[in-house]
Length: 97
Length: 351
Image 1 (cartoon, helix red, strand yellow):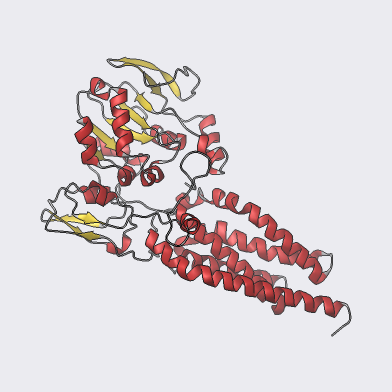
Image 2 (image 1 turned 180 degrees about the vertical axis):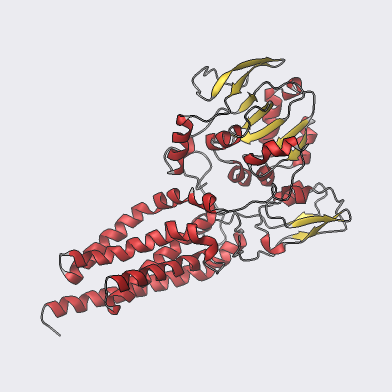
């Protein structure tokens, strides 16, 4: 997206643990990672939307990020720091996508 | 068996084939009028949560024990988007029970998840049907799936294929080579356009209330007549600004904040209305502020349907946007009331 968005800053990669398997690059929707010399590197930090796919699929837990849903409706419904509920759990409620 | 026996009830099924694990339904790869109608309907939010297919294994073409296995969600729009790209291919589709929700949202919720994949693979007896041990998942399923856990529990390796179904054919043809383009999520004009109806539907009740109140205010201000319609016109402008124009013009407003994009569009629209209809400033400014606040709030709601906003980023927006919207909304209404009072007094001959 040409205007970009506010950077989240919670993504971190522990290169000492990285085995270069490439899963993070394989799953990232915004090309945040690249593999160079058999190690993963964060190359587009500001594109990270905190979906958590990388952290989930890293077999050696080298990647961590604060997973969340970038949905104003869910955040406003969830209160200050409350649990974010977007109401699309299937029974009643609607999904915006 | 892994399907309830709705033989022939589903129009998207062709026939059945025999496998070592029993009969498997074959799906059509050409969409029909019913499918397009269904897509249109759910895009407008009607029956959105009931638009599903039965989870389980399906065949495309004439697959055998070597054919690839694609995994998808049981939201019918997802299912249709995938199968229409598979004409003349031979493969298996494993449909997960994501409660009628699309892949990416379901992955975020965990329903397109590790447990459900394991359950479906085992239930469908996939290991008896294919010789290979590989599942191809849509890339956007990744936030919900721990690939190495699936492998541990099923013996199937997990490969994340392209983001878009339209790239599946090329992906398979090239020997499962995923290009950078295939791995990137975009948010094109068309992507945004199909989301607009639901934004409108989400706003129409509040829109009606605001329009009604503003019409009443317009009548108080100008008496019954065409001029009274100006008040609701500003409000409708704000709603159109936030639910239609903001999504469509998203990348062209050079600020990051969705709320600010909405406010800018709201201000632009209000200015055009004020100029075109020669609305005096003491009426136009309060109405413009209210309309822009509405537009900003509606645009903020679009963050959830977008493909690139992080939760922390949206929280940051909200921290500034909500107080500003509240204050400007209230200030606008107070100023509008003051303006209406002045108009009434003027008409009554008191100055």
